[in-house]
Image (tube, rainbow, N blue to C red; front, side, top):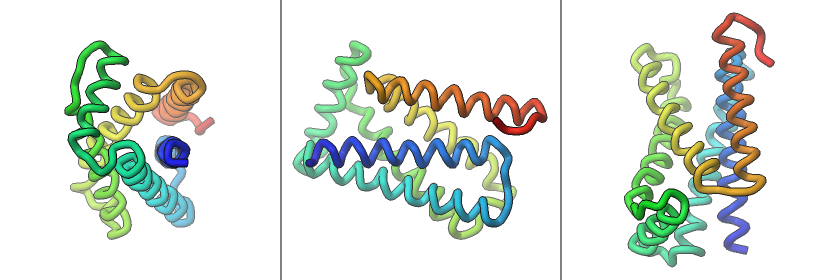
Length: 166
């Protein structure tokens, strides 16, 4: 049960991330759409928090040292370089997403200062998500990640060219 909980919380969290990114990339904006996206964004973060807690409970026995060692092992298997520090990037991912959730609920998404902050934050979240889904996964999960990435890129590209979203 633990492995399934770990896997499905992250998968569903990534679905929430993709839905909100698609909404933002399409330029769809209305009070109802914004509320819906904010709720999905919040649920996505909650799922990622659940993934984090499930992984620490079922896979790492609440040991940070074990999480670092396991991250190093997985990194060595995938790219040939043993690096356990990637676990800190995951911590930052969770904190950054959570911080954005709080700021959005506080209404800061419309503040002028926040726009560049959100672009940096989203760039980081997307980088970590792509790394986790495409580099560190295999099989159908990787291919769904590639297809989703291409779809989001197409939505963004069409909008940037002044066309309707797909």
